[in-house]
Amino acid sequence: MQRTESVKIDWEQRIRDLNGQPGAIPVYLCHQDKRIEGVVHAMPLPPEQARKHAAKRNNARVIKVARRAKRP
Image 1 (spheres, rainbow, N blue to C red):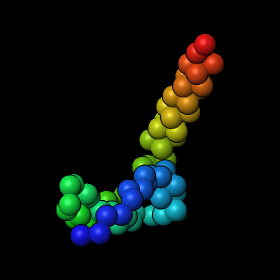
Image 2 (image 1 turned 180 degrees about the vertical axis):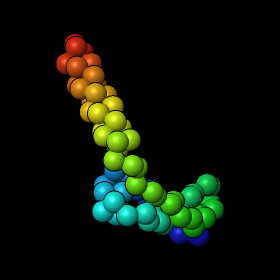
Image 3 (image 1 turned 135 degrees about the horizontal axis):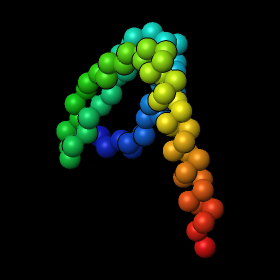
């Protein structure tokens, strides 16, 4: 089996690309010399839940930036 480089999936962007529609994102699960083809099913959150999640994500980013600023 040919070795290929792993690529980190930008899940936020992939889901954004679905434009609020349910979708399936093809993935490969790799372990040692095995590569298994699979699919991740994505469903959009209801608007209220999406707003809450966005606020949490934003707060986490602010905290991360603040922690970095405190480093020597």
